Amino acid sequence: MIWLAAAQQLDPGLESACTATPTWFCEGAWNLTHNRMIARAADWFVTRPLVAVIVLLGAWVLNRSLRKGVAAFVTRLSTSKQLANGAMARIGIDRPDSAMVVGARERSRASTLAAVSRACVSWFVWTIAVLIVLGVFNINLGPLLAGAGIAGIAVGFGAQSLVRDCIAGFVILLEDQCGVGEEVDIGEAVGTVETLTLRMMSVRGVDGTLWTVPNGVIQRVGNRTRSWSQGLVDITIWYDGDIDNALAAVKEGIAVAVEVPEVAEVLLQPPAILGVERVDATGTVLRVTVRTRPGKHWAAMREVRLAIRRALVEHNIPLYPPVIPNQPPAR
Image 1 (spheres, rainbow, N blue to C red):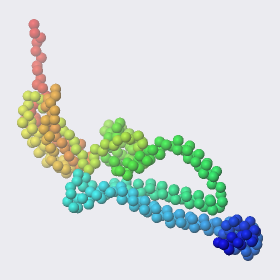
Image 2: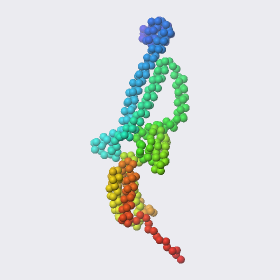
Image 3: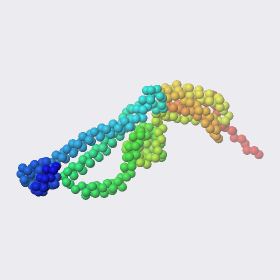
Image 4: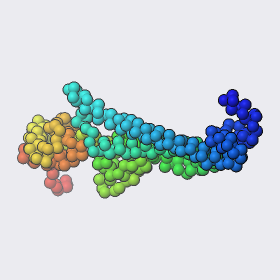
């Protein structure tokens, strides 16, 4: 570097043609021709494009590496719960959700998150690379960055709800709070999830209403079909009925219901009789719980109710107060 500085001091024309820090091609062209235009042309059409190509090639290599690393990290993070459950199941530790495996839904969710992460990495790497290339060609980035900053502020104010929805959707997908086909309670909307994207969630209510809810306004997610579903069957017995006989009839009805193939194949455990749930003006309420595969409890509960109803009628258990015939008014 000392001889280069000395050469520049001895040859002002080199500094004029190639600046105070001449590149190899520019200095070589000047030494061969001592022509300022040729030296500058060598710098602009050889050195700078070569540096730009090297920068873009490095950005391409870095982008590929980061995309793979981020995709692997997000996939690992999004499936960590299922992998942990599988590992604990292999060593004999039973957990409520140990039956969950990394199936099609988990792979789809991991693929969506990985795609979003890769896109963010690509935008960041290539933006930095483009700025570096513009700097190599001595393009003043001040006005460009100022204009981009103003435009970014304007877009940020206009699209802040959109950005909030996308960030919330990314978190919902990352934490696997719910998925398509699951029954959820998200406040005003209760029903089955039909679509779930980064921006919004579509929930079909039991009455057929399709609720479209932006992810940014969701304050809570109640998932009713995660790992298993449980339904509650309440049976009201009138006060004249014998509770012991009623419990025996309920047990008999449950035994009949579990023999139905449609019920037997979705039950995770036999329906449990919890006993007397409450006593109010309508009578004594008995409660039965029905635990099934995710989302299969509604049909099972219908069969259980039907079988219990038939058993109660067969054993003459009163379900309503006796009808008192009309009496003539007292004179």
